[in-house]
Image (tube, rainbow, N blue to C red; front, side):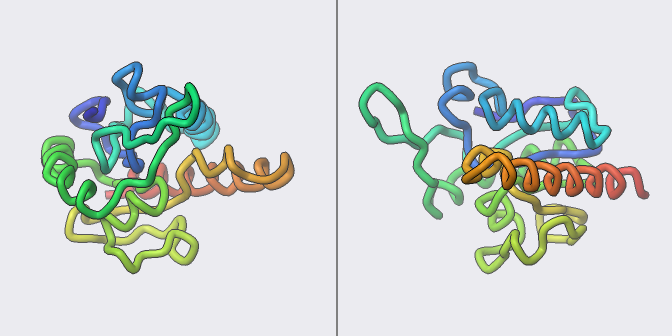
Length: 171
C-alpha cells in the first residue's frame, strides 16, 4: 500500500506499516490510530488533506490469532525491500518536513541507533530528508495503561505536531 495526499504537500507523515483496517481499505491511517492522528493533526492546526501520509513498509505483516489478524513488527529485510518506494515518494513529494511516526519510521530515516525517546520533537536532517522530526506513533497512545497517561501522551503528541507545523512553515 502506498501513501496518499497532495504531491506538493509541505509535510509528509511516515509510519511503520499498514494495519488491519488499512490493509482492508487500501488507505493509510484509517484505523483507530489514524483517527487519533486525525484528531491530533486538527488540534495542531494541520489539515490532513494537505499532508502526504505513507508508511515505511508497504504491506501488513500479521499473524492469525483466532479470527483476528495481529500486527507483527517488520524486520530489517522487509524495511530495506520497501525503502526504494519510500525514497520515490520523498523524491516526488519533496516535503519541507518529514515527520517520522514511531521507532521503525525514525530508524529508517535516521539509522538503527536513533531513539525517539531522546530526539522526540527536534528538527533534524538525514540522508533521506533535509528536515525531519520524530515523534511517537499514534498507535502507542492506544496502548497506554490508563486514561491519565493516554491523555498526557496525546497532549505531548499534539505538541510535537505543532512543532512540525512551525518547522514546515519556515523556509
